[in-house]
Length: 573
Ligand SMILES: Nc1ncnc2c1ncn2[C@@H]1O[C@H](COP(=O)(O)OP(=O)(O)O)[C@@H](O)[C@H]1O
Ligand SMILES: Cc1ncc(Cc2csc(CCOP(=O)(O)OP(=O)(O)O)c2C)c(N)n1
Ligand SMILES: [Mg+2]
Image (cartoon, rainbow, N blue to C red):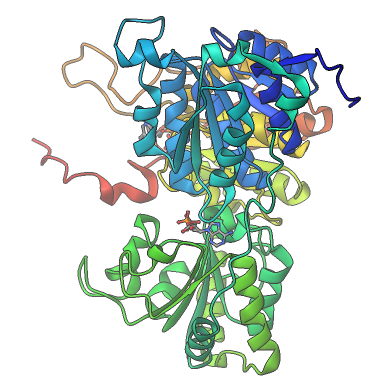
């Protein structure tokens, strides 16, 4: 832009906007109110996409998954205190899942907060944010906005990605300074997520261990999906010939139909493998902490016989649960490149008896599943409804799949194959409910692709009001609610006869009526044929659509696949 006249000034609002634009930020997820309402208008006027939500929690979830999908930090913008607190959940979620996100909240002036003088929406937000995020900063002077944004971006995306809090007291926005001087304080971040090359010794140790394996297994986690080195990962898997297991959000790095995919033999390969190469996957609760009977160990805590190679950018992740025999610390792209060099030099495929045993187990389980999927009971159950979704995703491999619930999550993860990377976005490491509609908005905004959300009816309820947001921005989102009338199922009753049980909803609820209130397309589907045609129509029209799929209310199991995490239920009287 032309050199400003010497007298021209610039305010805090515009220094912030220019700092964001300078760093390629083009989308903001937020909710207006004091002291940021004008900022939301200016962001929009200056060409950024300002997506306005009905609850800050959903704006935050959108920002968190924006970071996962794009590697650029998703930005959530909220008002002070209650708005900030509503955004905090997603900041913690982003940090737990290693998604780069920045929560920017307006705040009260330090001098009032520190004397606790009772300002409008007064809260010591920076102190409250610190324990649940990767980094937290406050900016008091306009000339420091450039540094504040640069530090927040670098903290969010470098090393292990995560959530960053940026605290902007209200008075900062109205501060002005000479324009040229102001612009000279802005920083375009250089190499925000630098490559971290693994040490040669670590590479040699890992390669030797993998070469010596009789029953090797590769485990791909969402870190491998986030790294966006898809071709290199596929090449490593295919050139080694090693069976692989994708974790939920790593599905699609290679097509789930790939001959080396061992998902359908998970309960066979985990205990049987002798060397496991973890790529961007933590041995946390989702992998039974790397021990116990899942891994062939005796009882709950017994270690299996596996040796672990762990590729991770976090040096202190190794040994978090069980011994890591070959930690390979670095960014996944650099680590995979080093492993590939060794494979290209000399490599023997795994023993045929191992790969044949995996295939036999896998094909047996796939055949069993096919029989179940072929049934078409009335009312629909999870399997028959998801058999339709499976076909729809196969026909639309570029569509984004959002998924949350318990049975609605677990059955979708195992029945609906994914074909491309970063297409399946779900509850993640915490198994958090409520991400659905925020994820839909971000998936539509960040990818411009069709979005398909498979929602438990309880899960949908956490963010359902954002259906209005989806309609307001006319997004190509097709929401399928697996309506089994309750949390896990719809059959519990109150033994006293006074109230509905705590886990059930209004019988015969018609969620499809909600979207009609905002001009979207609502469909009530009681058969697989109705579900299929409604989904096909939604994809063809790209109109916001909500399908209320009636599912047998007896079909679910308590907590889906993780029933065992419930404390031992009191013996039924
Ligand atoms: N670019 C990257 N390079 C290396 N490791 C990464 C990268 N991005 C994320 N990670 C790591 O990936 C891991 C993701 O693990 P996790 O969230 O448990 O995946 P999943 O739940 O799919 O198993 C984290 O330990 C994180 O440090
Ligand atoms: C923020 C938060 N609060 C509660 C919970 C606990 C929970 C886990 S799964 C679930 C909903 C299960 O019912 P749904 O109808 O969605 O799915 P289905 O099994 O198909 O019937 C809840 C409430 C979590 N994980 N996060
Ligand atoms: Mg349900």
